[in-house]
Length: 164
Image 1 (tube, rainbow, N blue to C red):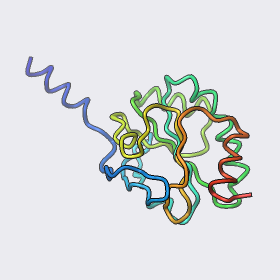
Image 2 (cartoon, rainbow, N blue to C red):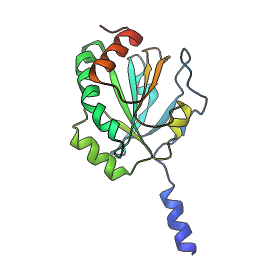
Image 3 (cartoon, rainbow, N blue to C red):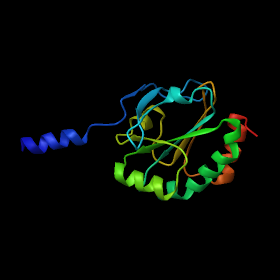
């Protein structure tokens, strides 16, 4: 029994090292965080300061996340010259399954692994897919729950992050 409890404790270790648990609010600074990406490399919100950023919350088991992936990639390519960056946040997922999803879709951006969905709480995300639009000053401009088409991503980036 003690071994089982010990193994269960190991499975609860999370790559997300810190997350400001103040709630993300449109018009307010985005809650800070630090953790590791799917390859174990450090990633933190401040790495993206000075760039418009889309945080996309996803999971490998989420059908709508699969459906919107091409649109995210296309929107990123379209706005990359204007400094747009995307950071995926994989929530309530298995690390190996998340890596397979990333590789299958040839995701051109990093994803932070947040198995316990602590960032989901901080950003008031109930379920994937969800996206948070943050301007270059680190202010949350818009939050949306649900899958977006390529046109939807481009429209929101244009409207909320003022990229053309």
